[in-house]
Length: 302
Image (cartoon, rainbow, N blue to C red; front, side, top):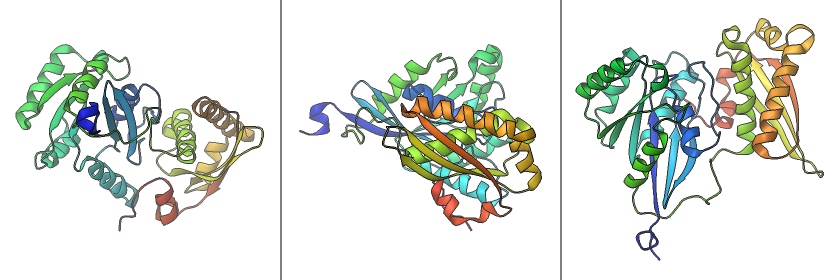
């Protein structure tokens, strides 16, 4: 039986935008559960992550991409390359814009690049729950003057306002193709990769501005125990001893709290007891480690 005969639809929806526009929050809302880490810190997402959402007979393959910005470091260049790579050949590209911030230099840069792309494009103005209605309408008008969008949506990914309607519209636009993933699969990320992401999320949530982007989390060991629990050993990489001290906290208290919260989040996500062991290592050149890029799903960029 063909996909058309069975009624199945399946396609790729790529979410692009400036850092902190709310792309990961929107992916989580469309999937219906958390698969992408979220924090108020810009550039939280480092690699493109595939979320799988179901709407009727349609399977939406949601590519959550890193925020697009002017790259300065090797890691930055790899993240931006991953973002544009995730948009290539998509059935729909969603330009997600912070409805409160509107059209700024970073969004301008993305629009200039998007204008040259052949994929269908929709504008999503996010965070309507914290944005003035009049300003949202002005932003929408200015953005549509800059580039032609098939549709413009006003949503709040955090509250869910407008998300169901957006999801239904995306489903209609998916081509008649067989589903690519089983119905119960929500992401292409491995448990090992998700474990590292959850710990990195806790670093951002608990340390805020104290620890800039000079850190990474590497899952060194992931082992299923005979009792059904999982044992995870992770290394938190930083560039300077002072950063290590920040993560450890006085008497190691802060690291224990990071581990405790990450462990609880992972246990909920995996549905099994988790034994999490964290170690902080100073590695000044971790951004030049090819194997680390591979582990977090980024291509090495010269």
